[in-house]
Length: 382
Image (tube, rainbow, N blue to C red; front, side):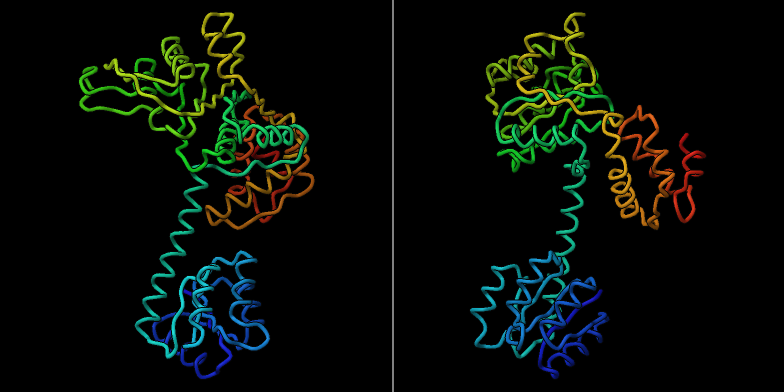
């Protein structure tokens, strides 16, 4: 673990370095705030110790600069007796803690442990959020900019949204973005893949059931609508939902009430419903497979996500994004893409859309040499 000590007093700087190195830490030192900031921006430190009173740039200015630059190290202020109020102010600005002079070894080690635990927790939270909410929408083409503009306009409202588009275009990402930018963003976001749940279980999944409602109902179960109360419910592949379940969903949308399977008691819920489908619902209505009244309830706003073939100018941005993402996740060395190889990727027909492109990028990273060449694309993609 790498630590940085910023202090203009040589005796404190060197003694703290020796103590920490004896404990097995890798320690760098800086004799003033300016050089300390330069090191902090160049290297990755788990913990930074920073004295408050220093010439040129004091500890408060150092902290402000590190926070402004997005440095995610835990900053521990070193304070003298007269600096306590300033140290408390630093905590409000983002410092992890402060240690009062004279420095105590046990206090230092405990603070380092707590600080590194916090840094780890913050990183884990970021990873978890990425897993839960997915990644940002990549692209600057006119079709994707229209989608982003729609999201910005619609997200703050409670309007129900129907998201349409082919498989792999990123409909789930649109739904997550709508939730994240809404006033419900701190409340639950629940996803249901209607195509993945057997028709005989969909009602129990959506509306819950009481104990004994059917053979395997050994205890009471809250459905997805109740779980999403106050937040957002995303019904993916809504076109595959049974007509019986559609009727119950319609009732919830109309009355904001539901009853669990096996119960006649009404439960009030406050849920914003987003739905997505790769089917033409108007054709499904004509064939008697989808309720027209439910369609109109769901489609207050319709957002159509463009296929990758409709936004080919975004392919270089997407390829670069996926290379960065995959190499970060797997530890593979980053590879550049030759211009001729990129031309071939842009010229390909992408029936699987964004999902297919990501798989292709991962395949090329695994199978290519130091660079991704046109020959690689011809060999492993076409």
